[in-house]
Length: 244
Image 1 (cartoon, rainbow, N blue to C red):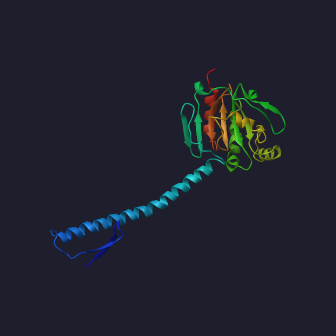
Image 2: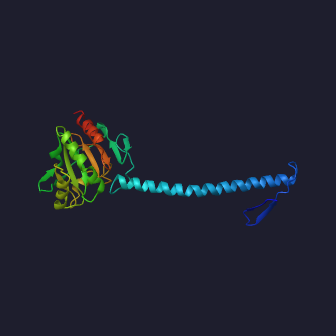
Image 3: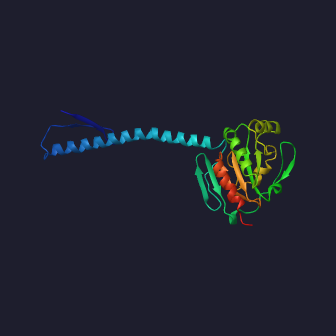
């Protein structure tokens, strides 16, 4: 004789006896219904147990992706803007803006690590690529060589400018020497003037972040996270082809 027990909402456990009665009997019907209920609840409990580790794994995956994408982030990092041409590629979030939606040219005053004064107007007339970084940022170190290579490849069409958001000149210069970065770096740690120039829809919400400006000085594209060289080359080409 098989005896099964299940817990009802009132808290009492009901004993159900299988007496091998004929299928057409009332006792058999009750036994079959109760056994089915017991099996259903067992399956439901098993499903809950299996779901918990899956949820934990998903949370871990999301946290890992966020860590890889950049050293810092904000809740608005997922938002797409401009003409809606936003997409995610590997560990980067790329957004492009159509020429008619780019707004006014970016304006800022800053100072390079060697003390030279610069303005945004100095980078107008050709495409400008601004990369926001700091020495302690692991993704920044990982992309430094690629950025230098692209800057050499597209030098006829674009000028590159590094924007250090945390370090002082000595630290910034040590970084650029280590990774053979030859384009200049603006020190933005003290004033934040360059970062403020991009505030709003085009804010550098993560580090690293790379902006491509068209020849008029307007934001053509933004990349949050380490930039892929092939994508950056394509973004520079698009910005350079902006109708006058």
